[in-house]
Length: 151
Image 1 (cartoon, helix red, strand yellow):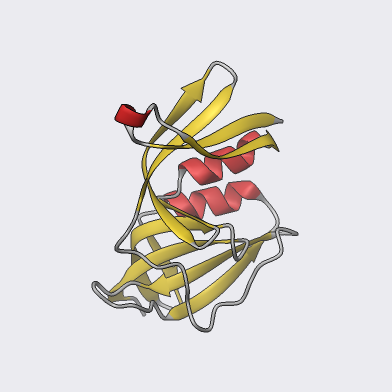
Image 2 (image 1 turned 90 degrees about the horizontal axis):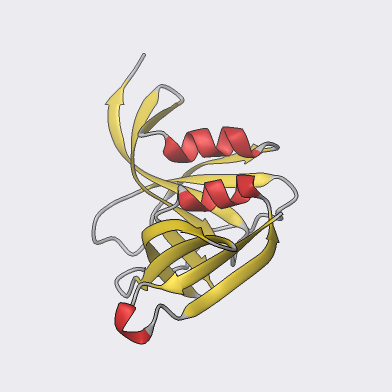
């Protein structure tokens, strides 16, 4: 087990700590490193950069004031497996339609999806825009734009 800290990417205020996890697996840290956004306690944060510290790992974030955390028909996960939502991203939209829910049992499969630039679902190519971990709903989200169709 390792230690992970989320810090505000604000050098003038000394990078204040927002959240910390003292008993977290390195696999979960890798999943979080792969995410562009972090949702916690109703707030949305955008990753600036991540790295190592002498006693663990750190993700520096900024408040994403233009983003909102709620998705109307969103179901919560359970952390008893790993849930990933594929959502259609549309710029300036307040809602991202749910395309598919994926449930995984292993971190490696989720990491490969989160790091993928594209994924194909039912013959449709989806091009990644961003990824997030939504702690409030206990799942990951892969936001994508529809690409070309494959038959």
